Length: 484
Image 1: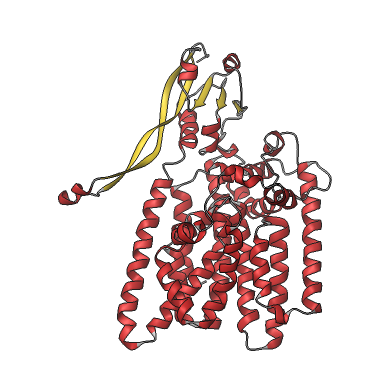
Image 2: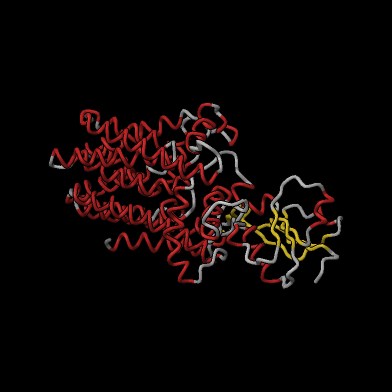
């Protein structure tokens, strides 16, 4: 790896250290890694058997992260609980993305030159979503690792000087895409289809056989691993996800957005300062236009689905950054534009970096549940503790890694009747009024992000005109007659 790859690694590491807690979207993978590290073999105590979620997810990704985390965790004392183990697991994922991105950037350097590769690295290292989210336990982030490798071989299949090298690149790409779609994220099939379609003239019997073999092997892998961990025959999680979201159309239950939303809202947020140069690259460089066309078609297909999230199009970020790098490199070739181009590119990159720092700070305020549980552990010395964690607290930072005391009982059961809360000594709740009249008293409160306060007049006194507004979100309550 070169220095620019190390810069991205540092940014990813700092993001994980500054914001160690996780959100509900990461819950399955985070809990699965905890349970694998603690028990290995599936048993009734695994979190996903108690809280299976709306749709199942594959254990292949968590098994890989656990295997890579285990050696360092073993040297550290083989701890299955603790924030340090959670951070370590996240860093393993983040560094995998950095490594895969370095391989893609290396291929960019081989095909387009060192200057384009450098601009690609600079744009990526300054983007919030490409630094903060690369260590977050999402299926989309797990899938980004093989997708970056597939994009590397996609470039090779398009621009290698040797026909045999292009053919091998296409076979490697097909195999990697098959694994990614079948095992990790079914929606990457949209990107896979357009990437393969762009090389349609090169697809022959060898490529088809390679693709068929990869699909079969990936399917058998998922069936073997996930049937065991989910204790269900013929468990293929990504097919279940496809059936739920596409065939049944249930994804819209999580919100809908207009058709243009990816292009007008998410892509500007993802690319930030790289966006203007990406447009220049697509207009001024034929190869950039060729690369962008496949992904523009893919995003258009995603736009047909009413439910939209930025993470669905995460694989488009490296291609967008490559187009931006080609745009910057193209302008840099014009002597009269060289200095203005470099100044503008660095200004946009610096602006993106400043925004990324601010968004990372704001994100650190979004985990009151995790901070509340840590505070309870630091203030409660009794071994006889039965704590109920309500839905909001569980969604904002609470994982099994944070359940530090083996003598305590942690419970996340939803829909309890008021009388049933009497079975607990402590509560982490977002609704203290519900319990204040039932024998519980507030002992502490954790605040979280509630918006931004913008006060331009502060500029006159050399102060920041923007500050984060906090409000109480999670209360720690103790039963009045609980033993000390």
